[in-house]
Length: 524
Image (cartoon, rainbow, N blue to C red; front, side, top):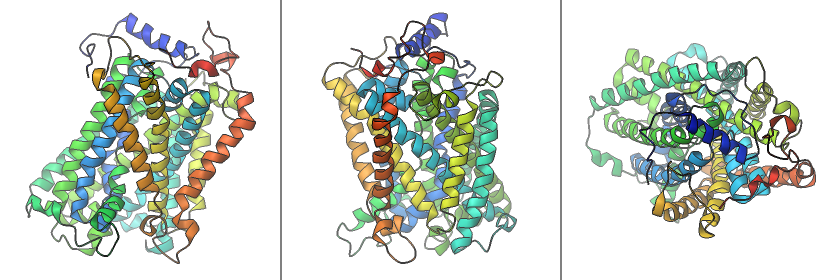
């Protein structure tokens, strides 16, 4: 795999290629290119968000897999790396807003494209809510003042989480509505703080190590008596790692607002994923080696927050936790931003209700404003529906992850088909996997299928952790995702499919505004 153009300066020809790639999909360039290399990297790494993911679900991994759950971190990284490498080739050739939707459409045709885009859009809105819930895991640990409702147990925890999450989503809605420049500045500043804080945290935990690396082989005896033994417990615990390492495609989804995205987006995708793996892996490892009591009940209840406060002391611990709050904020901002670009991409193809309004770019803020508001309202609505559910954290999180894995499959599977048919050609002079393309693509598809099934498996620990057991809760992922996928596609097939076509205001000059959907035909 090579990126032969990595060291060349930006040229007008490079920007011309990026605009031609957009035109090949049937669109004219209309979003202002203001984002630099660090901005695209920041968008990818803030969506992955090392501190948000590790601090939100570390407790879940330890509770269900013991310290040995740490090995799910490199496992998930290797699987997602295969997906990311496929995305790098696509980002080099088609750096376009709503990348998952447009890639699926280009590789698999308009129907696959719509379904992939719909799943990703729905997942983005669910993820917006899931990430917002992380405030509840962190802010009350800083001060009881943030526990506005109840004592933080049972239903009061869920109710307070909804309140805090609603405030966060309202903030991300306002920032995104005021334009990409403001979003990029806040996001880049937040990412810089997060990276510095994460590295400092690694060093501080390393200085407090009290046990050897053999700790990560301790299973706490979990899985005994189960049909799959510890392997079954490990697969459950792996959700804690699977939650963190996704969203790297965001770097490409901002392609129409980035400078030279054909070269910068692939590098940003890989850098974001690799940096998250290395820094996040060290945080988790050193946390397990440094925590005073590995068997403390708080470790599987409060997670990394407990480790930081008990190991580093109250003052330093609270500073770290405030950095985690910043990380959660920019993570939700990035999730919201990616959802907006996806909604805009589908709307300009007239593939959503009220498409002409959703695809309208504000002349003042140079960004689609209405999608920001709609996605924000839906995200808050998801929180309110689950306000009385104590298991809100694991349920919403797992469903969001599964839908994103399925949306990624809507890209990697059609891409594999095109490779096998000999129809896939990477962009010349930019990122390419070369002879490794086919095996990497096969591994990406197998990984996506296996992990989607693992995450959706009807485990009580994930989908019905408290209260009486109900079959519809245990099978919640299949039911919810089935309704979203089948219901959404039925709407598309019987209603929206008849209207699809690039809206005239967004169509490339040389294209026929009535026939964009056929940009789904793969280009040899």
